[in-house]
Image 1 (cartoon, rainbow, N blue to C red):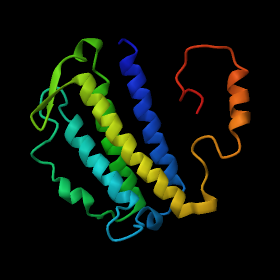
Image 2 (image 1 turned 90 degrees about the vertical axis):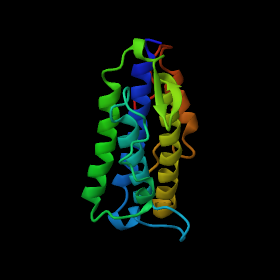
Image 3 (image 1 turned 60 degrees about the horizontal axis):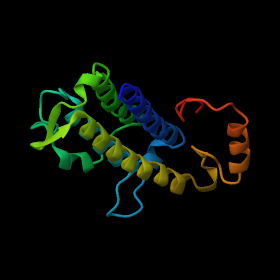
Image 4 (image 1 turned 135 degrees about the vertical axis):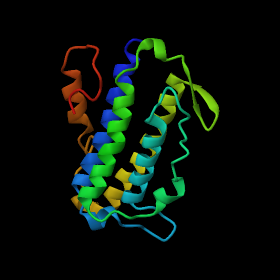
Length: 183
């Protein structure tokens, strides 16, 4: 368990990076694109993630993760006025998450925290949030690929390059490292 907190922090950094790399490829107008009236834009999905982060990670160990001041339904209203305002909000959510993770120790992992009065170990709560954010960031990346089409810059192994990627990986000595170390 001693490596869990370092590993989970790297996982969160990885997903934040996928979001950032997607945003960097898109204009503000493209970030606001909705495929249809029932869909969410990238800005709305990210706003929801941020609202969740601020609620879940503020006073993480001592308050319920669903704060009274959170108004979840408003997270699905696109009110960003610029790409800068959008990325500022995105960064604020992640800063809240990382500041909550930083002081945690192995001794905290079995403590009970609550989300809507449902008890979770700290480990379970962290895993729940990682799954939630990766789900939505996958949506963000998918929308980015739809918007950019053939101009999309791959965020992983590009199509047709798996053999070269694997050849490079297997040319290195076996060793314990995180998969994001060389991204």
